Length: 161
Image 1 (tube, rainbow, N blue to C red):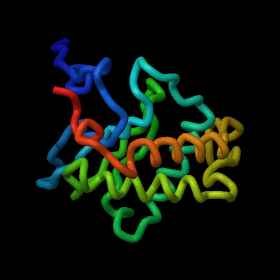
Image 2 (cartoon, rainbow, N blue to C red):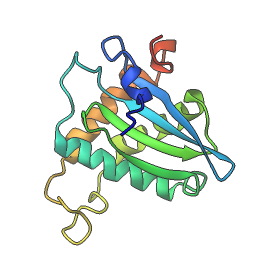
Image 3 (cartoon, rainbow, N blue to C red):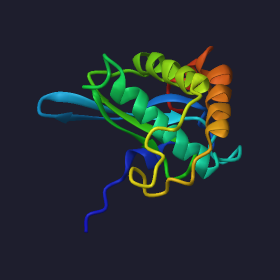
């Protein structure tokens, strides 16, 4: 097996800030598809998100993107990182952290304001439907929004060199 270096494993997670980063760019059918690293927690320096909150952010983020009139057809994927420090968002036609920042900021505002049944949080719709926490998801979204997204610095939009 030829083990190729995975680019995300080359990012210095000790110096990484929270933010919205271009993780990778792929070309599929002649079109750019970009994976965005939505890093809500500082890796290795602050507690990770609890699973129910992150699971709820996954459901709400995917619902927001797939129902958005301008983003539904551009959305490939939205889901949690295994390390529980954030989520991945894969979009076509959006290529920069600055473009994605507006999307993520609006999505987090929507999550903060969301006060209904979590979409897809029923036994027939979700493989772990009991494991949701809307209050904590809203708290995490608000923390990320107010501390990072509303006034981002360069280190919140570019990986450390």
